[in-house]
Image 1 (cartoon, one colour):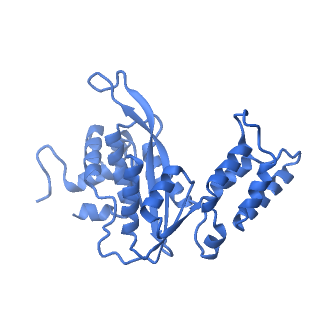
Image 2 (cartoon, one colour):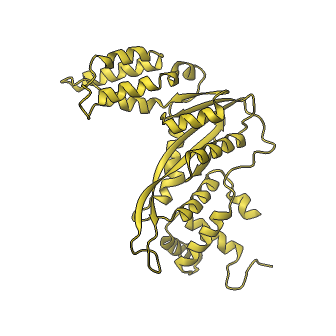
Image 3 (tube, helix red, strand yellow):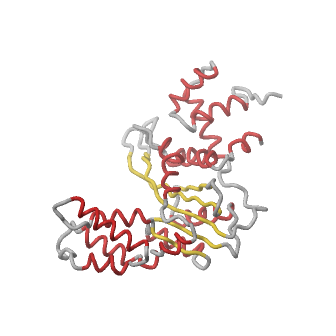
Length: 308
């Protein structure tokens, strides 16, 4: 038995189609297949097989029998992708609606582990909370595990962190995100060297848990309430609202990350490299299938799926 059905493809060919379809546009996948294997198939076949397997593949590692982790590092963030709501006509192109949809991406790993596992959803914040817990469980989350989370402090992320890990972990505001707010609030010194010096001083204060001094430095220069473009006020309010999540000193002493670079890099290699190709707009169901494939590949589940 070679796994060929009537009007179908063998499993080996299906894998080749999906290998290329998960990484490239369907049209480019046809050219890659011809280049590497000397096989010609229509783009519609690449599309059909890629989406079919994307809906079937398991993207999150099995949490059963996973050893308990004493310390987990986890991150959550959102990334926008282009989505299309079909209109009328045979192909749905007439009167279609184009908009942007947020993919909620999270990652987790035990402290000392190099490989982070990912999970993603186009669903609600509530759904994102569920997959966040699933991926941490796959990394060894147990009742005594300490959880260290880093992110930009979006209210929905903080809420889901509290729901899932609030009693056994701490949430740290991404240091580089706070620095961006401060960079926009630099005093208008004539010389750029003095501006850089001011920013470095505030960053040093943050790293030493002296956010009160940072706020004091901003407080004396707050813009009037009637001004809409108010970067100083924005930085002041952002930090004030999240002062409980600025314990950089403890994180650094424990050799824990203070930036959310892992999940932000995941936006590129898990999501954007395929789902934000130029001129590409997705039906949500198809985007979810591609996303599933790419998360599975990032989690090293590709070989397991095709072996089974």
